[in-house]
Length: 255
Image (cartoon, rainbow, N blue to C red; front, side, top):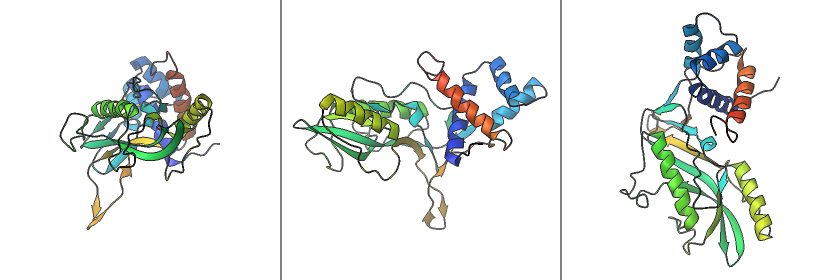
């Protein structure tokens, strides 16, 4: 039987929660029965809701890369897929991406890694006014920033003061490989993926931290009210990943 990391299980639970939210009552009952939940219809639905209910509060974070395209090369393209996860934010949150840029200078492409954060001034707000309790607003703002950056990039740290044109941005490790493959063929030159200190991805995170005494604690990954039961864990993860893949294909309910 396959083994899963805690992160893989959380991701599967996220996917099953989104499938659940998009399902009719009859479909929800079939999902519950698939995993051998019995009793009244209300009890079946209740046990599944408890397992698939999540909110994010102070000191927490969540990876939201699945809600965006893996990479983009066009400032006219929306990278947000238009969906939001089935969570509530119980405190103000920020969104940022650890991404791979590919920029062009005199016909030569260069790849490098950097954080992509929201810029309140460019968004037409006051400096620093980029936190929100609305996941939709955070996604809309990040989508706008990506389109802005793809037009021309100016690093706040002065990394790219000449504002070199950006050929593409990748938001996940798979996206980085796909973007490099596309650009190497298009430009007929080797580029390569830069060394990066952690996986590429887009995350939302609380603006506050937990403390033990005077020591600030790392942000905690989002959790659900209940984990998958041990005896059903493998079946639930396998189903969530398979069904999510089908429903997010072109024409699917979650596409």
